[in-house]
Length: 102
Image (tube, rainbow, N blue to C red; front, side):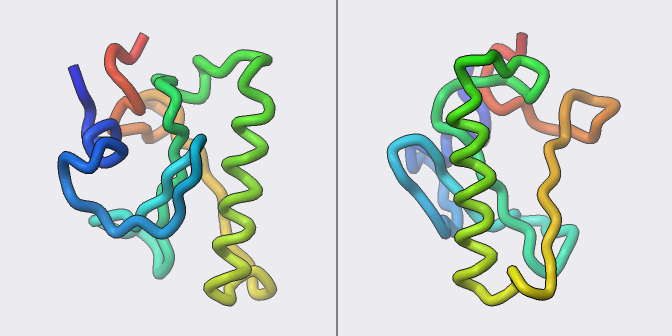
């Protein structure tokens, strides 16, 4: 069953995409909680951060570096920004990255 994120990746629903490469997609949150609120997601199906494996180390690095580049491009790198991974329900994750979330 597709999630909202997989539908965005597949262009089935619109999103304000700010970055994309073969591994990642980043788009502006439709309900921002900060002046700049962008979601950087992997294109590989991973339900949440606790499902990451050692083989995902490069992918996680790509996520962080893409966020850094974006912060530099929009001029907030010097003043500061925050990177957050909400993981599962108690960690604030409201949408599983991919279905099934297990």
